[in-house]
Image (cartoon, rainbow, N blue to C red; front, side, top):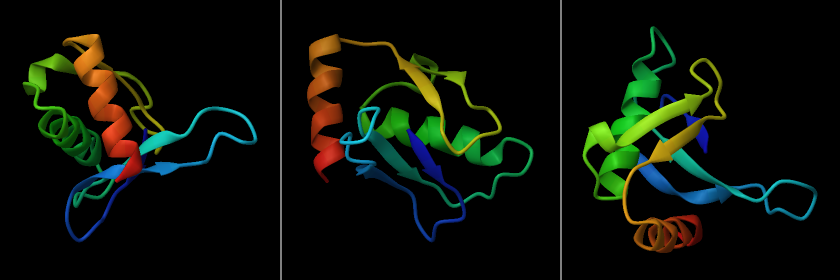
Length: 91
């Protein structure tokens, strides 16, 4: 996912990149906190949990603690999560 810190309001949706020149498109997550002391990262994990209707404990950061590009792991039904991801990428 691609993070946009300092947004006026949180939003999970849209895609970064189109996949035509390399990796598949990734989900955009906008959050209000700036990238200071992990505040933006924590806000991202909470926003993603809410967008996928998961508990915060079911969303873990795999890589990208200090980067705008983050990899997260979601715990839940793979089919349901994949369907929701496809919806969010289109929004």
